[in-house]
Image (tube, rainbow, N blue to C red; front, side, top):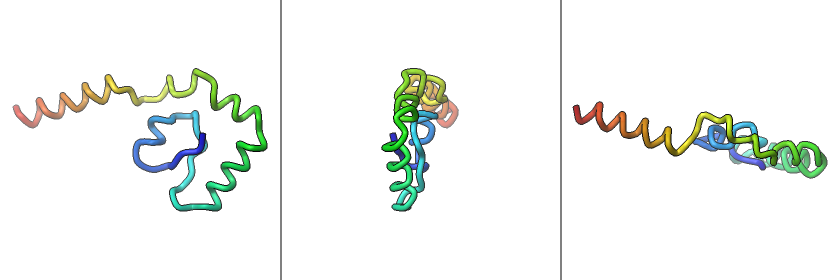
Length: 74
């Protein structure tokens, strides 16, 4: 997968993506060429273990959001 290195995408993708700067068409092209030419990298990025070690989970997002609401509302 190729994804932007901005917003929440790096956190969600974890180490299962090649990250590029948005708007950098040369970097996007290089990432696509890299993936097109390396079957082992594509296979590695597709492994189920990817994404499981990332700090992002919906459960964590809900819990932290709720904590902020409790703090603000006293």
